[in-house]
Length: 318
Length: 303
Image (cartoon, rainbow over all chains, first blue to last red; front, side):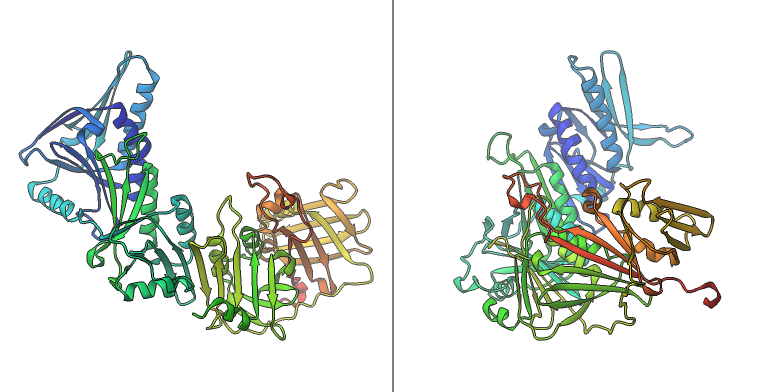
């Protein structure tokens, strides 16, 4: 089992300033899944089924050059690590690279087995090596034992299952405002009802015995199945409107944890160009898909993708 | 739900306000613990919210109708209802967007006696809330505040100074003695508990701290520290920033009245042109009053 690559300058900036800070919010422990062509950062795919799943996928060229991988599992390697340690290692490498500018610094990353101090058992590490003009710094990030063949197949299966797309997706309005709203909403209750209609309505609601608090965003951009909103809907309250849309089969509603919903919005730290919410078929989960454009264009950058799946607490009505 | 025209007809009150954060600040001032029941009283003059700690401490927030951009009151008598203060504040807070002045509409009662709140800014986005109300409990103790004599016993102190003094008295804790003396004109806060701490505010020595002072004879009363602390612990930062004063008056029987002024003006930090809203309008102030009962004399204290 071998893995060795050089993290490109673009790769360093993607990880350091965008993806690792966003993924750190999803949870402390993350799986890195490396294949011949892709690197995935995965949260909660096989470990905790009731946690929020996040899937960040990079084509190897988006992060690395001189990418070499080999293993007996069709050249696939996966392991778990503490995301804050990885972030620290990348950050300090950045400071070394930028501290000695003008010299072609390379940040090499490789999988190693080392004997840690005061131990007789060799342990696996992901090692970052920065070579500067005057100095070379090696940082070892401890990682879990690489996943066994059976675990790897399980991870691959979970990853394949996590790729199904909701039929209707609505584009998230001003995400900062939404984040702000949801963060304040957290004080009022724990369970959030989310309904999404083919008319482009996103309706969020917390309902307890003492209070009902909701927000409705209308006329959002719809991707996938669309429908024309009935004109008599205009003067109705948000609750009546979404209730009617569900009855007519034009909307779906699920209940998720408001903490999960707030976490999913934290993915904006990865600076996506837009985000879409949708409910998976049969109300299996609430999916949020982040879209990244090729810098300076409005074209989707297909080498990077990020989406989260929020577990549904109550199948709701569909 | 019926159309809004019909709702308006059957409601005791429909009002709109354009500075949610100001109201949140004002209400938070009287939120001294997590779960607090409040009684709300509506009238043609405005909204009064009352919170109480059984028999010892009462606080009132006066939201006069001038704070609202629209205030339509049609009830007979003065409708009163109970609700959870914490929930009300947390709920209003979700309507407040930093950097924006958001307009909301409050209506009472809803079809099921709820308090209805909704945002009134945009047609395409809408935030709404329905808060369950209760039949209010009767106020257990009458906080009728009466002056102690012909001249009022009162002083006005910078809110920041008052808060700092009371925060400092946390160390001796337990009970705090407040003494007003005409000669030399001064106010003394004295705490005796785990240790002694005395804070003297001299009127002539420092007119910056003590803005006004009225006292014709020496008085001295003791108050429980935790109740004194409740009167300043959640004073919003804009009160401190605006360098406002708080007025303390001692009434008959040693009842202490603490008054704060909280600005509910529209945020003047908007990046657009500064219009008249940028100036502090005197009518855009919420009045907060706390009433603290003194501790009984030591020989009558049994517990």
